Amino acid sequence: FDRSSDKMSKIAGDTLRDAISGMIEGSKTKQRKFMETIELQIGLKNYDPQKDKRFSGTVKLPYIPRPRMKVCVLGDVKHCEQAKAIEVESRTVEELKKLNKNK
Image 1 (cartoon, rainbow, N blue to C red):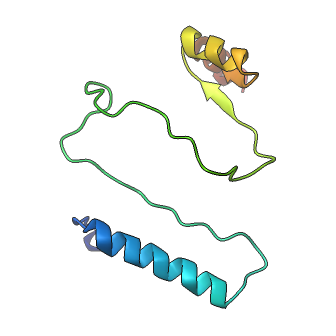
Image 2: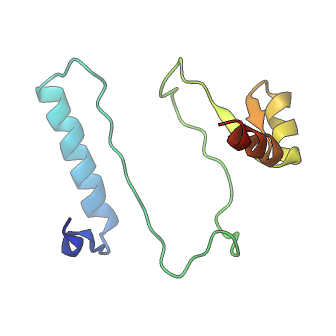
């Protein structure tokens, strides 16, 4: 495993958009028998999500990515109550600890 290839760098937004557009166009020219996806991973320097809550919110996707996908919320009591209100399965930290003990 070569660590030298793991270096991250800054990339311009236009360059990123051009690259994604190119991939989408390429997928149209050669159709596949499966759904192709694009994954983007972003790392923020000097940002601790536990301490700093600058980036908090939700994003509603313009379409359903996987219609048969099931979701389970892992959270505290407040989040589990919100999940139950919209009929989404949920588990609390205590329930996860019980699950871990039942191996």
